[in-house]
Length: 262
Figure 1 (cartoon, rainbow, N blue to C red):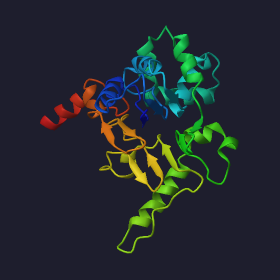
Figure 2: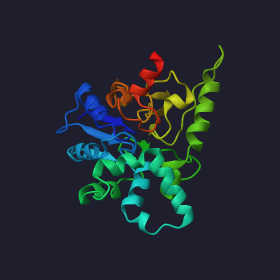
Figure 3: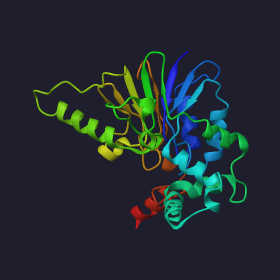
């Protein structure tokens, strides 16, 4: 059994299919870890969740957009106070509207899709002590005591670790790359690698911390990694797979190309 990990496809079903085909994923034998945020952005959230439901050996983690979608589809929109209204508008503008349209504005999530998201894990630790979590964690606090919102939203850990990583590789007499001693490895999503460096189009390994979100929600590609060999396969740039859609970029691929010709 091979073990694969990917994250943050954000409604990009076509990119998911490309990644699984290009890595030779065998859904009857291989293990897949998905670090969250299958929803919101591109137009095919429904198809994306249906694909994941077809994979027997799947561990799915809760992402912040998954939580947003759950709050909406669990009648959150019917009982909103003014503060919640602002949060709802924020979700809709950050890809939520595409998720609503994927199912049909009057339809809602099918029960099996709702249960899929409700059953998502806040984190997962493998038998060989690999931690998988959507956004980050606090190494000073046992993860089982950490608030779920921190695990799916906070960028404190990845921002601090990235700065330590940059310092460790800067200059000729570089220090060793920092590692987190509690775990053999740590896999994260949530923060696109291209946010740190626009040229970082593949997963970023920083010591024993691996950042898997390569900007599929925006201008990047979806990436899948063999957790044991560290081989990486990628989709085409996801916005090219959905050329007429603006997604979370607020501009489509076709609009960009037309602008370049003018």
